[in-house]
Image 1 (cartoon, rainbow, N blue to C red):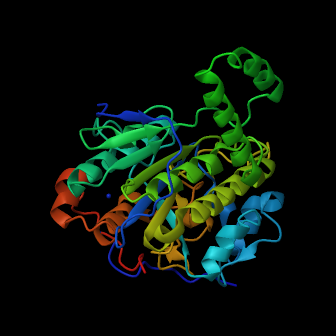
Image 2: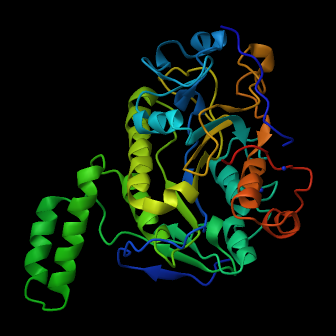
Length: 381
């Protein structure tokens, strides 16, 4: 089936701060009615969007991917499908709460992980364009909208003078149980530390019951949901995950990693409670990958990628974006999916329509020198 070009519904409208560190799981008191929430999930390493959102209606896809193309995909529309590991996400799509966005990337068009991530996080048109992060500048512009990064250190996207906090789990999920047994004997005789250690171990077990073994992303998104669902919880959240650089053995790696992403979406949905209907989750990456499979069953650094929007506040159940096709003449430099939309256009749309930031704040404070990048209409329910 030939693919028709998909156009967005409107014209295309995106220094360490004073961080504190939280060490306890949040209470689950619900947020005030009407308060919207935004969670940004950055998949570091360059997710192969063509493996996640499969352009099954593009005849050139099978030619370029061969045996790497996922089997038994989950249909979205006549032209695209989801990877089979994304079953929960597919259910959200059926409910109109998942919106894949195709052929999107930050304005950086080279292939360096470091520079591309810097550009995504600083919110300008180039690496090194700002020493603060656009989510922090957004929190400062909200006047009362706190921001939370689920991370061991404050990421660039959250650095700056705005009200930002970090949180990281007290123990990783994949701690060797034998090591825990040995540590327990050391803590047992301490009346202060013993109870805290037992709570941390119990918490680790609870997280593991609903997450793929050793997976950090579902645990991080569970934590983000708990914090953001509180009555005084942050309106802005950030979660990051690594391991998406798939130069070899991509099918096996992304089977596992996409299952972790799916579990993360499920975990956030379960923990969000009443705020789900007022939440947008933006799943993004720093760049896409080559359209053709390489000689080791993987793909190399590319440009155009994909994004996912999820949540009760999303106008989903469809595929958004301007699809350029995978014909040889349509590829960027003859090798990559062409990026037809600046990622800042997506972010601008969410900040303006969902968090109600003014256009002047977006163009002068949050995404400076971005007047030519117009917000996308129609992303929100």
